[in-house]
Length: 258
Image (cartoon, rainbow, N blue to C red; front, top):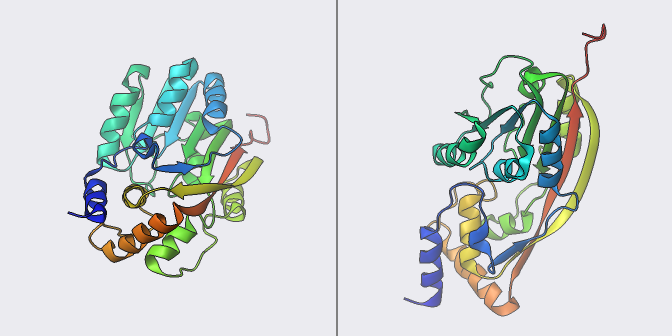
């Protein structure tokens, strides 16, 4: 078995459940946004009485905030992928969290006005109408979204040049929030460096972050992975960029003050 085969076999066997990226230590780096999402979320959780985290993955980010003493009186989360639901329930059990398996684009299983804080880190789908519905008047949506063109260089390398739409743009998010009756109170944007040091890291990333190359499998993309292996061997790494934006919205109180 040659070096490429060994790396691809390792990548195919690597676990991809949850949003723990420690497997990539020493093999890939992703620059973090300057605002510190988890730290800011922890502060908002401390002030909340009832909070909901959407598309929570394995609950890793939410757990890190709650471990710091930020768990509100009621804590709920949703996740669509069954293996992640199990991880999230285990991760958040000590905080009394209710974790619901819910498709990303499905209605939320909560009464209107249930939460004074709704959060999400890197949602695949943003259901603005449902977010607005489950927020209580005066409540806040606080999230970090993936922006336009994230890892486009990697997508293009694997699939050939692809069109870049505006579905993940800040403008679209602002319009969706406002259509749901929310006031956008803060938006911050960042373009960040993403770097891979071996082809196994590329393959595991694509298995884990499934929207970068839809339908990716190691066997189906072996030829492009071989080309990536050669490039990294020659240049030392493969570099792309990611886009992130922080968005915070508020649900206004009723006009009559109720």
